[in-house]
Length: 119
Image 1 (cartoon, one colour):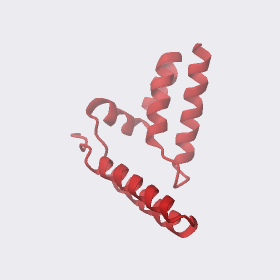
Image 2 (cartoon, helix red, strand yellow):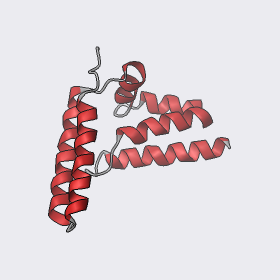
Image 3 (cartoon, rainbow, N blue to C red):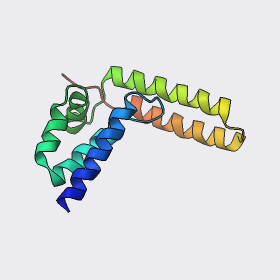
């Protein structure tokens, strides 16, 4: 079972890394999942993720304070807005466009109302 946790953690980390480049794919949830899964299979891998120069600070902020940095919030909201625009330009169904837009607004509201790291 240990190898399953490690494989899933690796997959989540890879998806999170891709999410850093691809606008519609989130980064932080995949990185948090990667740490949680790696903790079950490989504490060394989990430690490596927490110490990663790009992913580490956001993960530590979330784990210690349930906080998201202002920069991450701005980037996330910009990505959500971009996603909404793409959806409105490419999806023909009005119901789907409205539904996804409402979901993106809910996610954005949740993000911006999270605490800011104290350090």
